[in-house]
Length: 411
Image (tube, rainbow, N blue to C red; front, side, top):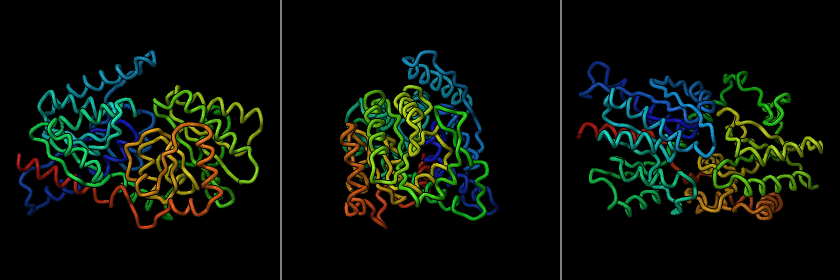
């Protein structure tokens, strides 16, 4: 199991948990499993500062950790990170000789680890395979990564029927040993487990109490208290970090938020969770300066908060605006209308079900889309469909574990 980013940890964990459970059964007296299973977790460090809370929350013990040095120049970031992951993965696989390497999604971690395994002719399983925008630069560089992984993986685990159809259409380009399976999306598995846990009376929030403002670290406020009083205001949660949106598009979003927050007629609280990437923060740092200068009290700009607190934040939100792929999948499960701040999306199931809306990146369109949901209850309610889960049924992790073990047994 290999993971390097927050979404990877969240989506790989259900498979890891299912494999560990099967390994424990296999090692018990009287088990029919013929071979001892060893499940190892590899942390590449792609999001070094953003994943530690996940390891603690999910109680994951990492077996191997890569050492990643940040690039001195932003322009060299992708190449530097790719080469470091590739070299360390190659070295690890040469020493350990795994029978199967499981990667997830479309990150540099997944791409480079997959290539390292391919170069040593190690079997590869690709979790969340087959999603496409059909634009190699959107999202960048993820569209390239997932297309490459589909062609070299032995097992492609499609999160939806649409993704499976894409894989079958491209099958002529895949390895002859490739097999495609529709499993559902593991994000639903994680959400089911995690939302139940944070709603338990004994769950201790004390470690997750404060979230610091991104641009003014001397200021802090009690986010838990804010969310517990959420009924008094309509919370609009905002995240935007994709490379293709950095610059003008993010500034458009910041401008729309400012207009909405300062217009009369709606009691709103905007909470913006910003990424660690300096380029993804510029527009929101400018907005924070404006907020500070004008004394605006209903815009909160936070550094990325920990996973359980972010779940609580999503659950308390009235509307979610995001360019994140994972949040596009999580919001429908939580019954939250999601406005997708992108021009293209590979998560088409939410759009097709009417639970998400692809709004583009223009300021006036973002502004209008939010106002429509605030002013028209029929439109708002049409995006909440109880009982409909377009991304899975919570059993994807078990399916992927079972298929992987069966494949290894027959190999």
